[in-house]
Amino acid sequence: MKNFYIIVSENDLKSAKQIEKTKKSIIKSLKRYDFVSCDTHEGFLERGFKIPKDVECVITIGGDGTMLRAARAAFGGSVLFIGINRGHMGYLTEISELTDYDSFTDRLVNDDFKIQERMMLSARAERNGKLIYKDFALNDVLMCKNDTVRMMEYEVYVNDTFLNSYRADGFLVSSPTGSTGYSMSAGGPIAEPSAKLLILTPICPHSINTRSMVLSADDRIKIIPKNETQLVSCDGADATPLENGDVLTVTRSRTTMKFIKFKETSFLDTLRERMRTV
Image 1 (cartoon, one colour):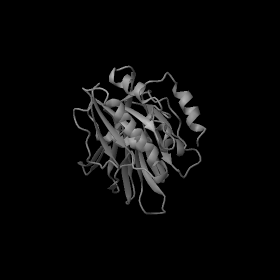
Image 2 (cartoon, helix red, strand yellow):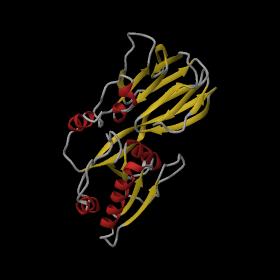
Image 3 (cartoon, one colour):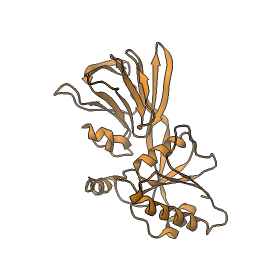
Image 4 (cartoon, helix red, strand yellow):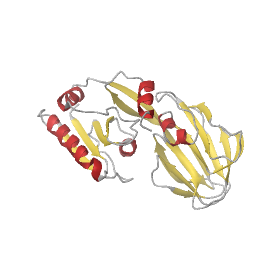
């Protein structure tokens, strides 16, 4: 590869020096190759931001949030991603400690790595048959209440078959990658990230026998709110208001995200290591 793009997260003063050092060291190492180009972006990635089309590899320096925003900015392209963790958990980042920058960039430039594909989610909402919202997610699609203490009511359908009515604070549809995010906090199961499945999880349901459901990646989930003051958001991005009777449909996206893998470390090893930091 020869076209690189470094994305640096917004950071606090405590981590700023370390992040700046990492960025400068990677750029210096890449410049050893005359044919390599490397651009950078620092700070928050706004919703409309797009990764340049000629970029082959995105290197993120930050946490999982930085990687999620980078994925949105490159959606639909053939970009490869690798993350250097400077955040809290770092489930999506490949590297926790980086000291040999030349070895790191050598492997990238010479394509000395494996690629792991992760499924993504597609979300669309309709009101009276008209499209009012369309987005995608690597982690999860969230429908939740907005500025109210009342319990919300939802109707849920799978492949147009009625599943159940729920009273809860909201609903999550998660990918396997997102199973270690909000879904896990809401009591959902943890899935191996390369699996092909959907996880449906009610948030704080008003029932003692309500549990998450694991569905096929080919299933189509419809969630219909029965109250006003609802919001829908993909990967925690800008929320869009929904009304009573709107139909949110979540399916597997045709687009996948491609991660660069250097290590032979299994997901279970990574999970065990990250859990120690919680």
